[in-house]
Image (tube, rainbow, N blue to C red; front, side, top):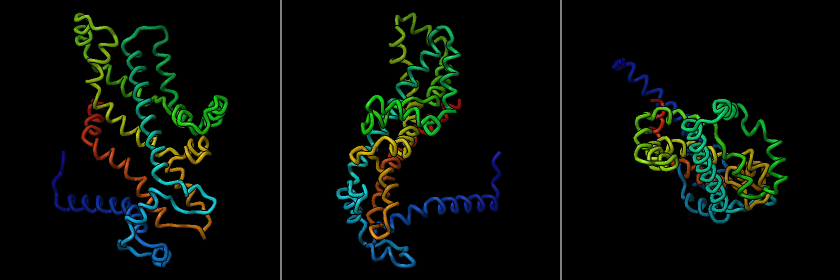
Length: 285
């Protein structure tokens, strides 16, 4: 039951505004810092109103990179963003394909120890990359995949969460639909491609949004794998920039790079918001 009381409504809106201010204020500061010169940003207190250098600083971050002596910040953001984009899309698409096939096998095929294998996949939820990072790094290094896109993506491409989500959805598909497809002469892969995939598209869209953001925000794994600047991601580069000596800080350009790093995940969420919400709601059903 939803109570419609003026005081409760006002309190609810007040809390929402407070939360929005708390979350958005650091982003606002980054945009403001990116819109001023380094002399303005170095003042105390820093200006809280927009300046006139936003486009110039953002363009410098995008095509030149912050000029920091001895630091990877000289790498243009366009290269870093391309690396992040390749990593995020590869992880999202790879996780979805592998999870769809594994969930399809678990639900629609009969083979010995089926439940055992499912729970073995599920248990990997307790083994994130941070826990198994040393043996994973050893394997990747032995395979000669350091400083490669394959090395960045391959260890992160399996997902127990997506497998579980798709398994739960496939179990809600009526048996009558399976029988009808079988009577029509559809084989397993035709049933998978022509019937299950269209029915699962909203869940796929929701999972793509989640996994894209997961891949885009990766920091620890690229930190180990990508010692060559050509394969570094933008999140990793920003992390290294803020550890540069104070004398070489170029904060307006660094903040411009941080603002650029926010844009792709925000665009993915905004453009796929309707599918994302619909996919999560249908999954709960």
